[in-house]
Amino acid sequence: MKNFLIIGASSGIGKQLAIQLAEKGQNVYGTYHETPVDQSNSTINYYPLNVLDEAPDLSFLPDEIHGLAYCPGSINLKPFKRIKPAAFTEDFNLQVTGAIKVLQAILPRFSKQGASIVFFSTVAVQQGFNFHSQVATSKGAIEGLTRALAAELAPKVRVNCIAPSLTDTPLAARLLNTPEKVEANAQRHPLKKVGTPADIANAAEFLLQDNSSWMTGQILHVDGGMSTVKV
Image 1: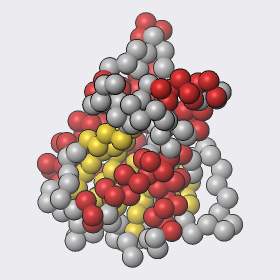
Image 2 (image 1 turned 90 degrees about the vertical axis):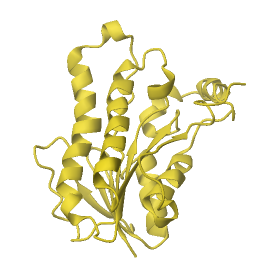
Image 3 (image 1 turned 180 degrees about the vertical axis):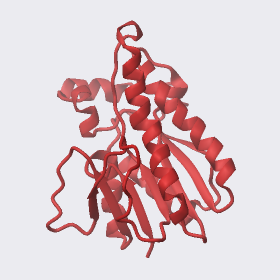
Image 4 (image 1 turned 90 degrees about the horizontal axis):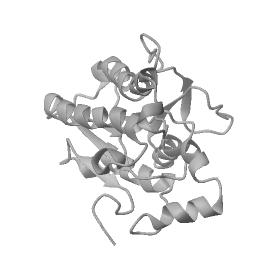
């Protein structure tokens, strides 16, 4: 039995990942910020956490941690000329600075036998889509951080990143709030479907555990074929 920390475990992909790990008997410590969590019948240990705090309080964790998944994100799609510089900073603080703060706080707790870190990017970093400059900027930084840390923390700590396409989560609700929008977005992908939280959580679960023990520094595209297949 191992100990995993899931930042942003109350919704979407983070919630699904926490559930899957707990169902397999792992000890899961999940954090939440604004989304309420019903803990009455949960096998997941939930704790409030604001990753934007100067020093995130992770004192609830055990001494040994085997894996970290950092799941907070945002999807703000606007023409570049309408985005204020402060909006780029807000995204960067949530998706990059928050991850750095959490990781620096948890590094001393990583198991001496090895640990795994999973970050999240987006297919838009490599593909280049209209109106995605805000999200692609911060997620591009996450991809760079993934590769740099994979080199620095090897061989004991593995660092990988998942770059999904559009996934049916609360974060993407306004992009998928009608059957017509769901179908239109599905048709943009070679596999003709929108991703589910389980599609991404399955990949994250794989990267967190020993089945992926020979993988580090990778950007794993779980995107319905969008990044590589043209049909």
